[in-house]
Amino acid sequence: MNNEKAVAIWNRRLGWLVLATTGFTAVAIALLHVLRPDLDPFDKAISEYVNGPYGFLMTVTFFSQSLGSLALAAILIREGRGQRRIRIGGALFIVAAIGGAVAGVFPADPASPYSRTTTGAIHMAAGLARFLALSFALPLLSSALAKHPHFEKVAKALTLFGVLFVVAFLVSIIVLANVDLFGIGQRTFIVVLLIWMSIAVYPVIRRAES
View 1: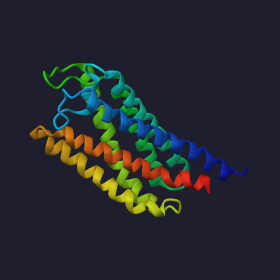
View 2: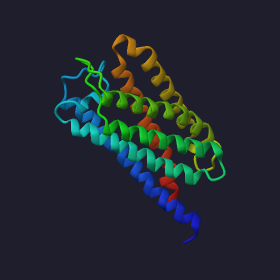
View 3: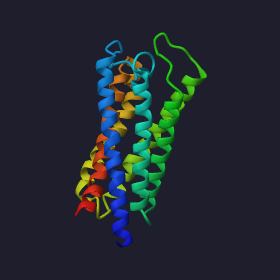
View 4: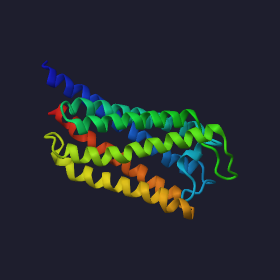
């Protein structure tokens, strides 16, 4: 087995790991909406599910997202040999993974009644670092992967969802947070992120199977 084929097979395994973690994240968050109807999804951040019943499921979700980000980073760094922007994007996904893990270790404060604790402040800082890193990573990678021969077929979709993520994130923190609608905005850009990650690994999985 030549080195290129071995890398393709390894990346395929990592690609399936990305799909597994994104799928788990989507299902877990959807399930928490059913299990915790007391939290208003339009207003409350997803991380608030960590407080109260079934909080462990939200904690696991943070680590699932981090694992998926690390797996995608490994794929991108391998695929981006000699391509600086792809490698930078992979490094930004590592930053996002660290931010997600820290947010899982340090749970969010409940927003109502709001309590300002050191743990909650660390959670907020980690979450902000994670999404800021992704806001740079997705557009950068979308443009860089468009010129990569293995990602040409999904280039337009990556660009579309990369732009949607940045727009949804900025609207959420600048506009919706001030009118008690941050929750719906956050859910929107997280869904967009999961879709982008799934599209990004599709060519990697297909290439190894061919």
